[in-house]
Length: 113
Length: 113
Image (cartoon, rainbow over all chains, first blue to last red; front, side, top):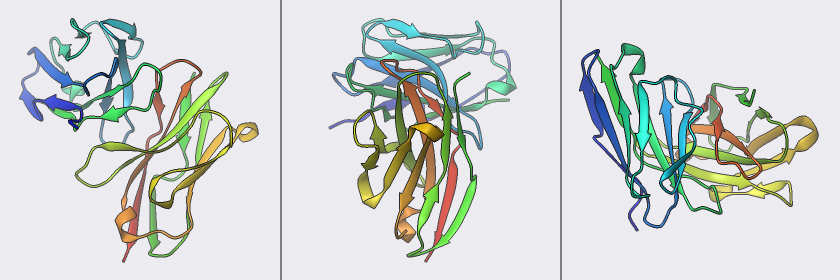
């Protein structure tokens, strides 16, 4: 079956611009996660959704970062006033409600110039 | 604070050598433990997991890991590595019924043919 998909695969933007990154989870997975991975590091937790609501957003670094999942399926990570330090690979994962084995997407590589 | 420490950042082995990658975690309470693998050009994928029960867990491709609660460790082992095991390996932990997952920085394994 189809896995987790993320678009775009690459995004280059200028400092100060707004970006949106999209994640399409595996059908039927109620839990959705966003991570950020910088070079040489492991994935860093950002936010986790259970259904439409953000169950844990403690990893969002500041109020420039926001994520939504309005219908409990597709999620969008939004970054305002991007900074060069936001450059990273943004990963999305999904899992069922009862078993938190996460299935990862290919990631979106964000470059802020 | 919750954390995961992977002892080796880079490991180089010859084919047929034995592998052990160290992982220690800091997390209060009941834990779920994971090893994920990322092969070159591919997504992160689950290698094995521990939720409860037998502390020696077996995963795909001949990998196993042992949960030692007293040492807060979850080391990954394989008796005889193959060239195709060249990849980056990440240890991860989440707690009890929670879904926020903390990853280690990863270990890059290179297996010489």
